[in-house]
Length: 310
Ligand code: CP
Image 1 (cartoon, helix red, strand yellow):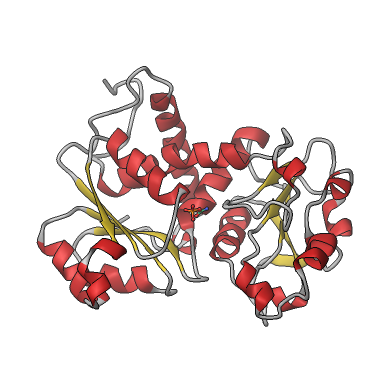
Image 2: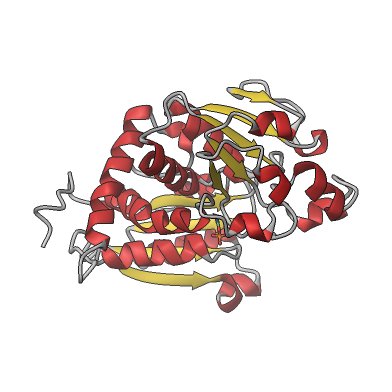
C-alpha cells in the first residue's frame, strides 16, 4: 500500500489487518513510555489546508509515538497564503525529502492530485465531501471494540449525508465489514442519487432508531441550514436531532457515535452527548492507534509485533 486516499481501495482483509495493527498500537499506548522506534528516520508532514482538532492532533501524536519526525505545515503561516499553488507547495515539500504527507483539503480529490506530484506516501485526512478514510477506520475500530465486529450490525447514519465525507467513507467501511447501513435525513440533505450505495433509506428517524446497534449522528454544518436545506435549527433538532426524548427510542444497548465536532443542541442534545452510551471520546481515543497503524502500514518495515517492540 503506497497511499491511503479512499476506503474503497481497501479490501475487507486490508481493513481487518489495519484494525488488528491498531489493537497492537493501543497496547503500546498503555505503556509508561507510549512510543516505539518503528518509524525512526522517517519524516511525516501534516499539511492541513482546512481546520482540524482531532485529526491533526492524533496524526501528530501517532507519528511521534512511532518515532517519526513531524513537520506541521500551516496554510496561514506558509507561502500558500501568498498565493503559491497547491502543486508548487507540494513539490516544494517533496523536494525536502519527506516520507509521508497527511493532507486535509476543502476540495474533493485534492489528495489524489497531490499523490501524482510527490514520491511520498499520501494520506487523505479529509477532502471536501469526498472521503475521510481514517475517520471510518477509527469508527470501525470503536464499534469492533464494543460489539466484537460489524457483521450483521445495523447502523443508522443520520443527518447531512450529502455534504459528508464521513458518511461516504463510513458507508463503504461499515458495509465492507458486514454491517447494514440505514441513512436517515431530510431529502434536501441526501445525495440526489444513491445508485450504487449499499444502503437503505428511512425518512422517519424514530422508525430507523428503533432497532439499531449504532446510531451515528453527523455534524450539521450551520451554513447548510443558512442555505435553506432546512428551515430552522429548532425544526431540524425536533425532526432529526438525537434529543433526550428520542434517546428512549434506542435499544438500551445501542451505541451513539458522532465524528465531532458536535453542535450540541442541534443534531445531538447536550445531555445525550454526555450519556455513557455516547462514544464520541472513545472515537477520539481510537484515532491515535488507528493512525499509528496507517502510518506504520505505509512506511513501516513489515509486520508489527507489540511483544517484540522495546
Ligand atoms: N472528525 C474530525 O475530522 O474532526 P476534526 O475536524 O477536528 O479533525
